Image 1 (tube, rainbow, N blue to C red):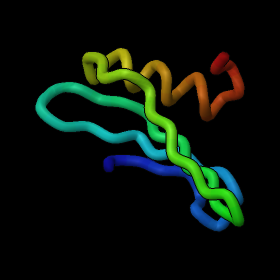
Image 2 (cartoon, rainbow, N blue to C red):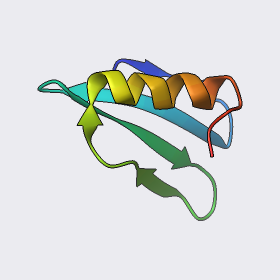
Image 3 (cartoon, one colour):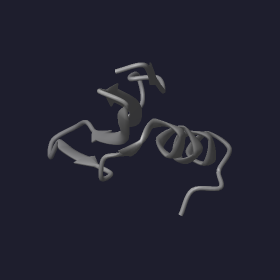
Length: 59
């Protein structure tokens, strides 16, 4: 993991990378916890997704 949003929230995100690939992980905490991840893409593409998420432009 290289970057993350605040884990004090009920939903937080992590930017993960390894071997030149990256993905974004979404973690839902609480009674019914869940984890979802994007597909692995080139790190540059993962950073674009991360930026879009942080600026409210992600879909």
